[in-house]
Length: 50
Image (cartoon, rainbow, N blue to C red; front, side, top):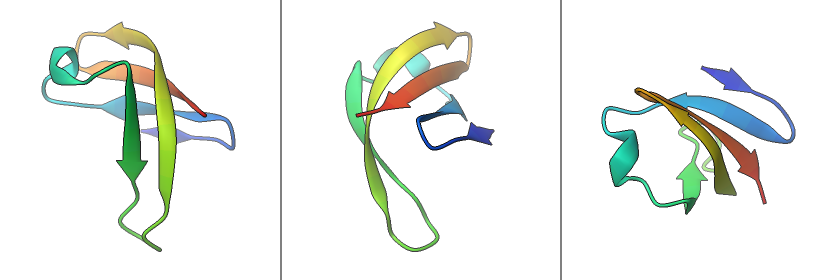
C-alpha cells in the first residue's frame, strides 16, 4: 500500500499469522528485504526494513 526506503505499509489477509520478523519478496526485480513488524491494525501492518 505504501513503500519508502525505510519501510512499508502492507495489507495481509491474516496479519496474526505473520511473525514479527520475516523476509518480503518483491515481484518486480526479484528484490527481497528483511522486515520487522512495527504495528498491526486489522488487516494492515507497518514494517521497518532491517
